[in-house]
Image (cartoon, rainbow, N blue to C red):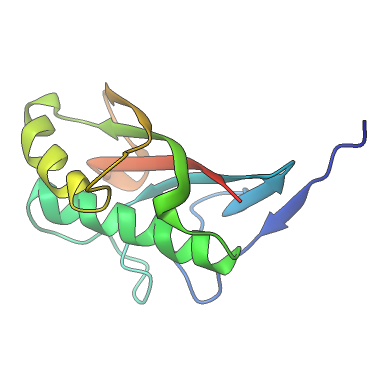
Length: 128
């Protein structure tokens, strides 16, 4: 069975913080790289509440999904990384507004640090 693989770059979109693709399409799925709360216009981390940072991450995932012809609402799995697990409830409240029904599978992990000093990062697998 042949494996398909196509890289995706969202332009304009949040700048990649390293040598990786925004996403990769493969065999009916879109694998979106982790997105921190970067403003896609300035390339700088946004300040604000954990909810605002979570929304920026989700908006960045949306930008990349749309660049690939996909929709975030078709996510089958999302991983959330936070540097302070005590923000879980506030992050969760913001997250729920993006998936009001039939949310994807999800893991939330407390981590010691994230790239660029970010406090929230999310990645996703989206059905095409």
